[in-house]
Length: 332
Image (cartoon, rainbow, N blue to C red; front, side, top):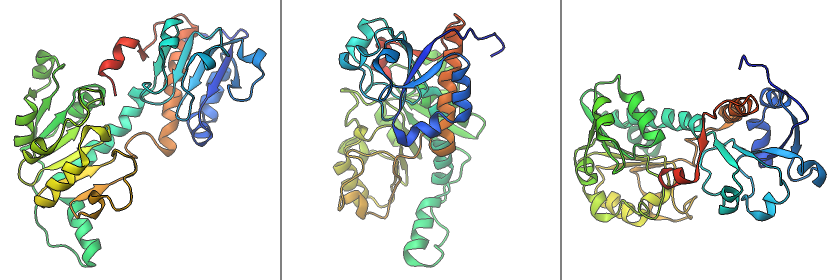
């Protein structure tokens, strides 16, 4: 930011789990924060210092911001969540106090989008199934089941932040993108070259189905037996959203009955799956331990994203990634 930053005597508290604090708040991020205030830890700072804090930086491992926590930071005006979803973090007490909330969900989305698009490519080349077969048999698998990219149909369930970004990333490719989202703007989708369809139709025509819906009371278990049975021949189902969107017992049953299908599951419910779960016994499932989002060196982008809005805030500029209570209904 080119605008001079007023430093003053601002106190900025942090509450991020130790496992992530060093990577999310790396030296470059901490240096940027130090330009606008003094950094103190919510868990260890003297209460008199916390009483001065107007900003709280949170992330994975942060406590829920209930009245007990909020009373320790009575001057709090802004929460900067250096992670994705804030559903587990915010409370009615926070909104009632008029505290504003920024999230790094947009920055975290970039990693999920990259992971998803990579797996769409791999699915249409049948790469994971063939690689797993080679590892299992200890001989190079015979080339088979390769659909190819050109002319394939990719179905996106959910056109929120990540769904839209995946669609944008696929736009230069020779693909047909079909989407299901009852809240999507039909005009915007048409302009982006995206066909809106019912969930049933999407499942029937898509070579790859990728889930990007939020987990709500209305979407929990949205893919069950009858829906999963509609999947097109040799289709791949990718879930990088929330495990609770799928009934995993039904999914295991359908995958066992239809070995033509393949599933890539980065999220499950429960997470991780218990030892002996039927999905762990199948050759047409590829499970990863919730790695699609920002990890390792990617985590610093989350810190930089919220500091961008911290700098805007101290300069009196509009926040770019603010989330409000009414936004939570449609967010992951």
